[in-house]
Image (cartoon, rainbow, N blue to C red):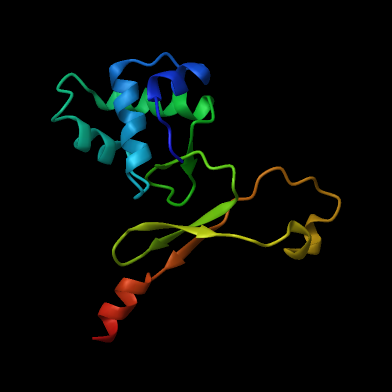
Amino acid sequence: MAVKNIDVYLRENGVKPSYQRKRIYEYLMNTHNHPSINDIYDALIGEIPTLSKATVYNTMNLFIEHKLIEMLPIEAKEARFDIYNPMEHGHFKCDVCGNIFDVSIRVPVSELSSDLDGFEVTHEIFNFRGVCRDCTEKRKR
């Protein structure tokens, strides 16, 4: 997703665009590794010496509230984040390198399980774990 003017985009979505919020959102737009709070903090603290982990945490909650990002339910012990993407997709976490990858999902809900008959599905979350392609290739060598 490309946003030309983050300031305007945040305002249009009900978020007051402070410098820290703009830089955090810009970082999320340009980083495709599904960062944690610590990753975001570590990446921006050199540029924004007044940044605190609490500010990053509060900003992420604000962005989630305004549907600008989503928290990935991939790991119970560490929250990871992704720019909000209305296109259904899943995530794959490699147990070897720890990287998280986007995975296209194109399965109609009706084909998933008859257990969902009569239910109204409003959101699908698919998470996979295993060994990624690169780590599998390294193991073969």
